[in-house]
Image 1 (tube, rainbow, N blue to C red):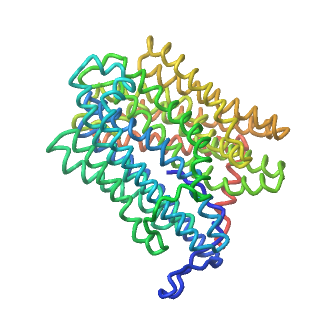
Image 2 (image 1 turned 135 degrees about the horizontal axis):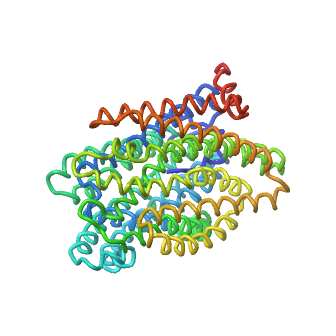
Image 3 (image 1 turned 90 degrees about the vertical axis):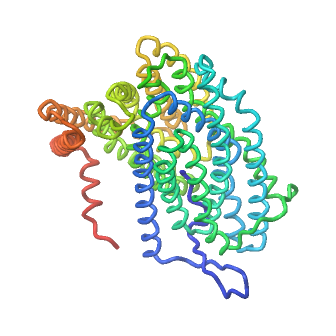
Length: 544
């Protein structure tokens, strides 16, 4: 989960004498900060790779069948509710609230607030599980109206939804502990917890899936989220976290409730927009090997991998600097930093977009095609992947642009634009799915992503005066041309190398990626793409 760095990130917890039962804060060394940053980066990449392995295991056991489609809806329903009520709100509101007390060294009050909010989260989470169990039969037909044609499919989805709602309780508690530890500037355990989460789900799926079917995957989610919570609990207890009475009159608890409202609105827009495609996919006819809901989900996971690894990492790393520039009123520095981050994201993502487009079929086959995941499913997922890939640069760029708004403490503009995009996404998806099926739904999402980031950039230009548009456009053009060359090189390799089995697909994809990468770097050098030289200088700079 993408949690912001708290304002107290310059403070480092140092336990005192155990008899004192308190914690003081001291400045960390540069080496310690560098090691923490490196560990977080490694853990993030490892977690995302393991997340893809998790999907590979699910594809092997369950393919793109209706059973997997039932699981997709059963997962996203509880996750949507959990994100709105607890997870996302905790990320946005809790860390700054707790950090204010820690920055003042008011440790007793910090513990009191943390204990009260922990109990509140547990109570809300338990209520969410109970409500989800009761309301699941009503929620599933709303989330996936196309499922109502099959009573058996609805029944399976309701059953899985009830199971996964239990996992959302543990997930909410795990997110709370992550925020608590980050507010104490302890990032190590919080960074490793998602790794433990994915490993547990993979192991649980491999053990339970062959024995009890898709229900095993849902139960594995309970084990995974419980593990994510439990691995962080000892560290949180060392910093004094204990459940406490819920004090609804405490200023921090009241602030939590007050600030949660705009946070929920912002998250609702994001989550609803992400869910539109699955809603319409449920209305499409399914084949035994390729359910549209499952197909769309697999394609989305593939296209989100490069965005999550590169774009989110860059945007998260630059966010504190954007915030400092915004707080100081230096719009020139804010504009320069945002422009550089956006150009860097596009420099990395554009060639990957071109290569995903030309390699979509062998790439999907390499990742998923084994066990219950058939060649027919590969073709269907590849078609949806093409639709999503068109919008990958916009999806990646939006991470930087939205964080620039957050640095300016403006959540309203992204929410207003996002609300319009939800309606547009629904209209386009309903129109494009008729001729192109899931590919049309994915293409609708890409069109909306491009329009969304375009409107956000226009809004920033109005607010900041300018956004270095010429420099961004020049970089986009040069990197775009180089990416087309990279895509052509990858396509040539695909045409020349004919795959046979897993090894053949591995060689084909690996050779195409290598040829495309070399072609891209060479083209960027000849076209004098500034971001290439900037990246090279950063890599050559000696570590300090």
